[in-house]
Image (cartoon, rainbow, N blue to C red; front, side, top):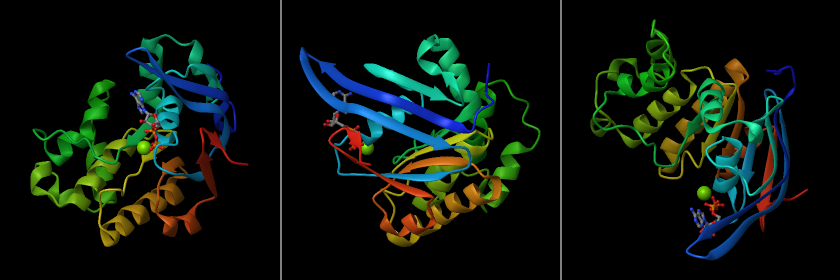
Length: 225
Ligand SMILES: Nc1ncnc2c1ncn2[C@@H]1O[C@H](COP(=O)(O)OP(=O)(O)O)[C@@H](O)[C@H]1O
Ligand SMILES: [Mg+2]
């Protein structure tokens, strides 16, 4: 597969309509978006304007109704579901607003999960990332005995442990108080700085804007120019 491209994301004329119980809800009306390798891009816009929908399409969790999406030069629309899943596990990390940590696993178990899913040997990668986010000493704790901020840092560790080429974050600080949110955003910005991780983050937090390369605004299903 050709991955020799500077564009990590290259989406063109993306439309999406949800169909439910015979009702059509058009949400995306022709999104064009390119993100270059190493960029830290924020996506803002009013609630309900289609940000999460777009993130799920770019992250190959959903197919758009029409339009083309290239990830690292590869047309992901022409792939089978199995190919998309493998490609996603290799290249994309996700962080969600509601962490989605598995309660029965320890912090370390949660961080190791994406490695297991793709059949990696563990050889210390989880411990390395846990140390990087300052939570190695909590590795054997279950999520419920961690603070909310710690849980989100674990979710971030889980997203980057596979060394993805693209990090997609959907309001990762939406459930955090402002001090905790600041710590998580610092961690994200530092991760981006230290490894040049291409990052697209949906946020309502204006403070992080100064640390981003670009701030995009979405309105009425399009990205404003
Ligand atoms: N699975 C779904 N089925 C039908 N409508 C949906 C679905 N998911 C989201 N929507 C609708 O699509 C619109 C955009 O949602 P979303 O992408 O979550 O926006 P945002 O993340 O900007 O708040 C909203 O009106 C929402 O109600
Ligand atoms: Mg959303």
